Length: 62
Image (cartoon, rainbow, N blue to C red; front, side):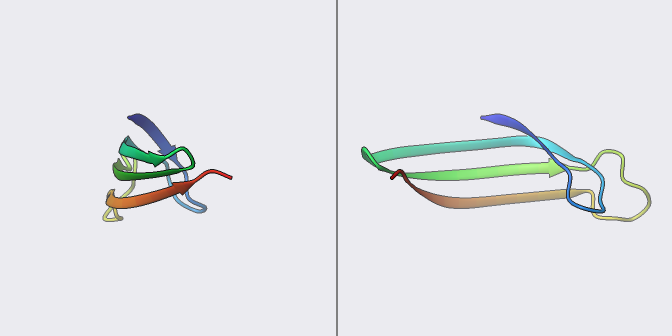
């Protein structure tokens, strides 16, 4: 679990939490479910103010 601050080029900052829950099924491989919900609290006008995602991540260590 962690906090994110992301600033895409030409846009304002997105702030929000990220949660990753996983399972290491081998010393070099892990599978995890990752979700995040980011909001842009200081955006002007009618621009997009929030962004959420949910995904499956496979991680390999060499």
